[in-house]
Length: 198
Image (tube, rainbow, N blue to C red; front, top):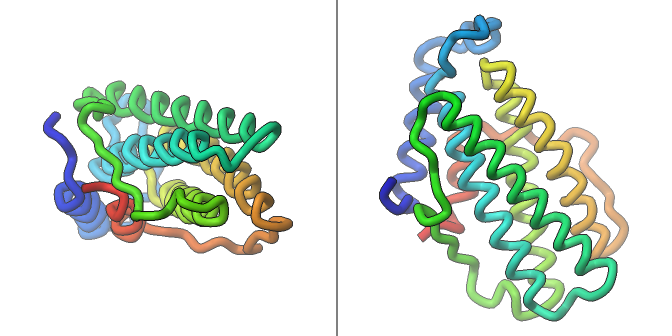
């Protein structure tokens, strides 16, 4: 796969989401037989997830290198990084299980905002933005994905992302979550993620 650029990522994600909506939202909640291939929207969510987990893992690697985190906080960042890598591998496997081309790390590049890691507070803010985006995106995914196995994976990962977001919120004060977090559709989620792609 060629390197995934911001415009190509948004175009693929938005196109798949729009095509699925145009095809009929009524079919979105129908239970598919186990042997059926995943829909294009389901595949688009998997591609989004591989890319999103790559961005998130890159954030945790960079945050660990800043020197702003020590002891328990540094160990938590290491565990979060390991979780993101495990998520990425699971989403990548789900994609290849559908006979789709894999998105490899070499296909991706991450660009963080200038100065995002210059202060502890800035690094925490960026992590909260990324984890918040992933959580809201996966909540949107579980409402639209037709394939039960892929939907379950997104649900499991959303719980992990919520834990990581709570940790980052706690670094900046006691975490107080939204009782009803917003749910992002694929086009909105892709727009939010695209700022981290060249």
